[in-house]
Length: 271
Image (cartoon, rainbow, N blue to C red; front, side):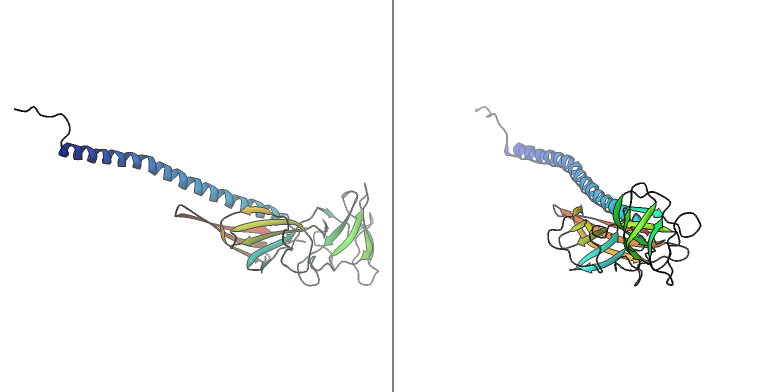
């Protein structure tokens, strides 16, 4: 009688393979699920960081823009919003026996000097008074509200050269110091390239136009699928708003993540 040969039977081998498959599948699940969750969280964090960058930069620029200088448009299929930045703001004298007031009177010659309450410092700049952003009173036109000026060190006097007559007094008696050659800040949304870019140090121009190729810019966000910039004028109860909608979408390994930014940014309208 022959002794039984050592080894596995076919049935035993099949059972072992089945158990091994179950164990391997369980281990793969245990490893894969946390890895997928971590990857998804990383994608969401990146989208959130992009959204935060958009709101941070645009809120900062809109809040410190020259009153009534916000304008929007579309250039080459790209949504654009522009605003005028200012270097400083002073309160001018408009009446009284002390100091030299700003004179705006069509019956008198254009004014060539007026005093402010502070000391702007030695600078040659442009000054803006009562910009309303409408025809005849728009800094983008370069007439009626904006004049070339000089300010001497430790002096409260602003000299207009040549003499100038502004369209109207500012209700807050504010004069803004602006450099027309480098004052414009611009955001441009290119959904085709998936980018939102910020341009600065641009000259004041009469209308929104395409920028020359190679104009320096800062990349604010990638993976931008769509943008809309909608201005809303204010009324007697509320100031103006810029309605901002930016959609950021990213596909990673066949999985799509989308985040929509919707913000209402307060626009300064009191000139």
